Length: 197
Ligand SMILES: CC(C)(COP(=O)(O)OP(=O)(O)OC[C@H]1O[C@@H](n2cnc3c(N)ncnc32)[C@H](O)[C@@H]1OP(=O)(O)O)[C@@H](O)C(=O)NCCC(=O)NCCS
Image (cartoon, rainbow, N blue to C red; front, side, top):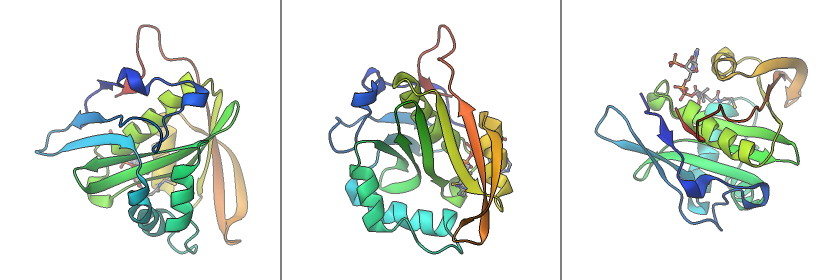
């Protein structure tokens, strides 16, 4: 299980200082786990666009057609209004998440963890990393869509505090329904700093 760690001071950002993979210094949060490897969370690098796109294709977009191609993923990584964070162990990419930041609302676009690494707290840590950035950026609401045929992800998001708001038939490729979920983003609990669990 991943230990609670305080996000380094560099990770505390304002909206116009959301950590950007290309412009920010490397911000790494080591997550010692009960195995010989150490999982690290850090902003995604352009060189990781293909691996991230392939994870999206296989774990998120299966059966829908490949929309988050390597080119589109690279665009997301470069986008100053989007933050993409990866969880890795050396060269091995265990998971990633990407969130688009609006003025008061942020949208969790993508989140996935490699199957052998699931249920180790990586998905929660990636999400919390982005939620901490969003809190500091003054975001009030986090929104997301997920496939209605993905009850595991629905259970995951519910566990993190997201609430289902809408079912949208045919949202994905005209034939797979989406569930919209939201979470109001309160301030960090008193006496705590932004951090991972
Ligand atoms: C959804 C996903 C990101 C979760 O990542 P993860 O690292 O396995 O999740 P965590 O270990 O952080 O889980 C946190 C909590 O969420 C819940 N949860 C996670 N996976 C679950 C599952 N398959 N079934 C039920 N609850 C689940 C549990 O309460 C879990 O806590 P616990 O392990 O202490 O019981 C991962 O399963 C995944 O990548 N799935 C394929 C892609 C996908 O569906 N992405 C989301 C939609 S875009």
